[in-house]
Amino acid sequence: MIDFAGEDKDLDLALIKQLIDSIHIPSPPQLLLDLRELLQSEDADPEVIASMLGRDSALAAKTLTIVNSPLYKLKEPVSSIARAAVLLGPRIIQSAIISSAFREMVSGLIVEKSFLHEYWRHSLSVAEICKVVAERLHAANRSINSNDAYLMGLFHDAGMVVLMVKDNQYLQSILRSKALYENLANVEAEDSLINHADVAYFMSKSWGLSGDVRRAIRYHHGAQDALALSPAADSYLSILIIAEYLSVLYDEEQMFGLEFRSQQEIMAAMQRVNMSIVDLKKVQATLLDL
Image (cartoon, rainbow, N blue to C red; front, side):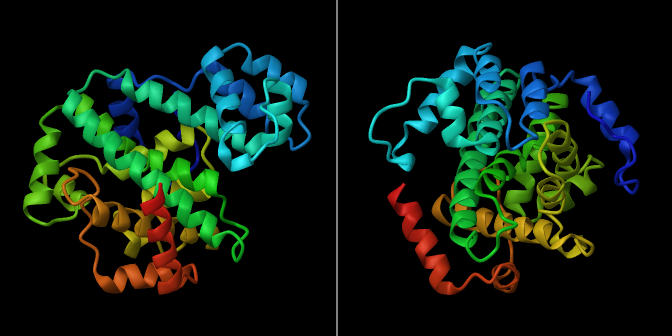
């Protein structure tokens, strides 16, 4: 069950809660909730983490896959979950668990397969680009974390899945926004639908994403309304705007993510995170190598 208490009173909380409850969106797995509490501490006992991860063989395998990836350039492979916990640290482990469990949850929902394929096509692309951009900017802005940026990209359009599960006619709103070169949030308002970014915001809250990240998710279709964001949230929002732009640039045929942002808006997002044209070209080069 999503916690709606005391936050963002300008949203129609009751309506969003009613929508999510009506289609029985699964809550985060108990293992994630247990681990999230444990991982709040930077000195969490690796043996305790390993014991908890051992309750889910898929997550344990995911953890070992990450630590043994080329990114960490280890001389010898790691086979111990406890050792992996020490090398990765709490934040990376939590990000991996949320990502794995969320993907499993969404893929288990009853929704048209072609829609789900396009959803993952866009969301995974944006998530990866968010991570690359955040890694490029992290040295100059320590408030940005690449793992959090990846989760932001993964969750940013989760509300679309909820609306599609509720009524598969929602697909027509998506297609109309693309045909009219219109912001999807505007089409949703015209069709008397809940803004999918608001729904994604509350899903990301339930799954334990940081406040800065989930507020960036909420405003990614209306950056002009994000007047009171913290510097970190504004940085994440800028990264998401840049990532969606690059995602569509490299895959113009995708159904989702059709953001008709002006050159001025992209440049403003880059300026807010001190990202130069040279930085952008380096990100593009990195993406071509992935």
